[in-house]
Image (cartoon, rainbow, N blue to C red; front, side, top):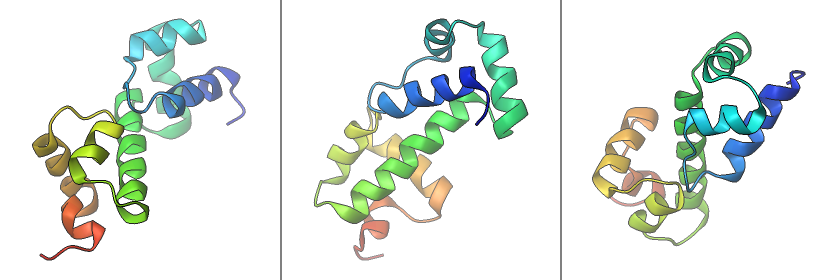
Length: 107
């Protein structure tokens, strides 16, 4: 993106996937208000910071599932989910299959 504030926020998110920084903390680090950050995401990405962070986490988890031998619970933790059940539900809502199936397991 050409907006330096948004680019900075995106870097923070990508570098902190496992800790899931709050929107308020990201805005503070970028030097803008939470509302300004939300407007930037809406304007340039057509989403909210929270939804974008969830998408980043899910995309990273998909790569980990498909390219490593990590257990589903370890993948969930690596991308900031505290509960494997919650991770599995969010993952299935996003990709249409459970993490286990996406890894190549049985239906």
